[in-house]
Length: 426
Image (tube, rainbow, N blue to C red; front, side, top):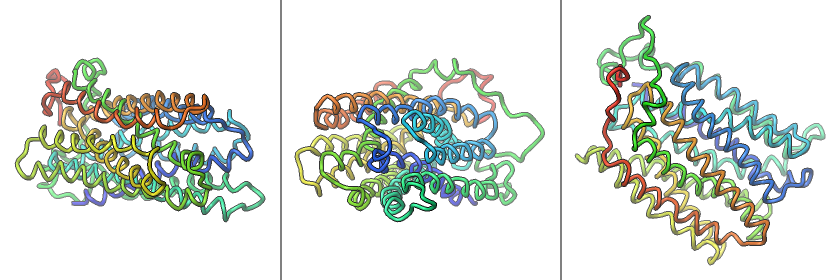
């Protein structure tokens, strides 16, 4: 069965998305040579990305449920790759903001599409492992971004064009190349020519027919459950910390630790390598517990609780040496992406396949809004003369709060009682 190769295919797309979104944070020092950008303006640019990212997480999820995974993922990847390249034409903050808005709009469909792939191709026992592999793409993209961007900035200035502009042109081209691979390699289980009848039965994937797909589940039906709001709220809290770490780590090293772009490129990839490992460990632990006889509810929550317990270590960052800073951020990135893998799999445990994209979209919107709130707070405090310490204290506590929220609102991880007319398939 080709499902694991499909997981790696999707993981590559996620890696490209994280490479694309890291372009501005890593290249910010060079961009500032041509375009003045304060901490508050940087927070504004980050928020521009996150607002459309969150909104299109919902829209992209719905799009996946309407168009299907194969066609929908192709469209959004082309869109966000062109949006990434458009940053290279910016002459001021307004144009950067417009490009950031477009990039967020395109990338917003990435994880809902990934969640649908997992729901389509994997049984509940293997979904956490599959999502771990896919989510590891976040770490791979983050690992590649700092050294690659630093190399482009220090080596490429073709045709008299500023080196930072080539960062966006090259990374945008990478996404367009991926769409060729996707269009040739991805099929749903119902249309894949290489699946046997037994494999289709295992995945609950009957052969394609002329019957119309089940209609999308109405939003009011999905949002009437406390569990839905609990997962959305948990994502709001935990992703607030994650987006702060991801968007501000390079600038923290530049501002608070005196790094230059080469130094940032040499070490800023290390926490993302830990993040990639966290994706595999978190998803793998949950699947291992399931194979050991634990219930889905216990397996997911044990792994979530262990992941959340790692996160307060980041509060120590202002008080230690540079080498310990990288270590502590690595622990936090590991814990965050272990956590994220598990949170993203919860909609597949709670909802039927034809509603997963929509629910995953609302969960992503919650996460993006959390990133906006903490990012704006960080920019304001830093421009008012505060250090990074208070923001790191807040960020270090958010995953623990999110885990307590999940315990309070998602009492049992089992399919929710949707009305019969919306239970056409699982």
